[in-house]
Length: 548
Image 1 (cartoon, helix red, strand yellow):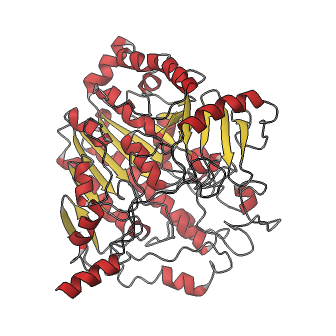
Image 2 (cartoon, rainbow, N blue to C red):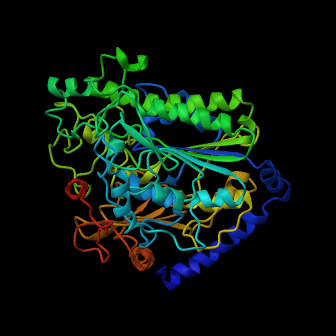
Image 3 (cartoon, rainbow, N blue to C red):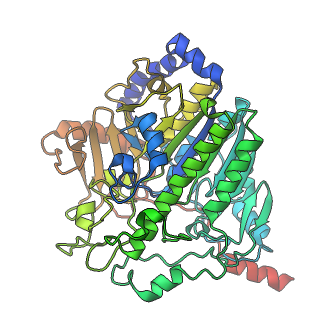
């Protein structure tokens, strides 16, 4: 890892946190470890905090997610990545997406045929170029496996744009059920899914692309009757993926209720394009919402229903008091429901200027977003502004965690080290993340003011410190902006000119550590976009057919 000297000195100030979290307050620490709690991690997809009623959503309610937030430990300053593939990779490896070499942005759109004849052939091509952590370095599932837990993932592929059954085994899962292609995940009616080395056919779902609609960010077309009819044409779309996952999750809980388990559920919801089998009664007759807005809201409510089903089943099985339920999301908000004349993902609805997040910034107000999905913070998915990377994170554990808000800064790549600390498992590799178990224990421990996280984006990297200072690279101006998030969460006042030494110090760390960036514009020293070797599934299949 390319740490600068100053970064190393700051890292040294953090080492006592690991020591404290290993010891903690003896009585509380022993209690937590002796409990050996089950752990369920629910990951919303493209879910901005503003879409949750606990954070102010007014158009509908999310009572089950609210319960996790309002009765658990609510992390005010939690961060994911700028979009889902790196966010899931960071969560599962414990490494920042600014650090090259721990995973690849693997190729997607390889299993888009309903015919499964050539799936194994395509997988073998992918596996030739796969990136696996070196021996002795753990994935998240490995941590739980070493603690004697049964591990399962149900839902969207765990990371990258395309995965294989071999990859799932490499990542340590005892059980897996779900998609293995990012593009297929954008459709909610899969003709087949993968489970433990097998292919599970879904009767009634006949569309190779899983029923995915073309992304529609053009507000001039979003209210067209043709688009509406395509969304609600249910031919070949019999079983909704979240219904399938709900059933598999309940089966998993019932099968493993008598042993410690870790269940990871990366949901597709509410990632677009918009698709839902029915409108939810909460929004169905709301005259203030367009058809597309009603459908998108129904997707969020559908995710909330899944959380409710899990909480209810845990209580029914009488394992709710020994199970931690964690709710989070991968990245910031994305508006899939723009409407002509009132809202736009691309342009400021008043000035009609294109959003570039430099001089014309996306906010819910500027976009005309009736849901205020990004809470009117600047930026959206794929941005390094708060609207793109600030995510919900809450830990719910009846009779163990009482409700409070936690203000220390945490990143998704801290989760692996935190779980290792909880389970008493050593982390043998030098991960980027640190344990925030002391924050969960309420033993008075705090992260130092100079604790920082590093995150990437299409606009360049960003560095955020625990005392609220944030350094942001802007690919438009090819310059650095400085904000104090404690006073300016909307990032309206750039303080770089007032605090040049602060910028210099933070740049020394960020530029020294960021060995990778998906910033595609020239100007940032690591402006690269490295994918796994590109594969063409159609050509692979065509050649195979010729040989046969």
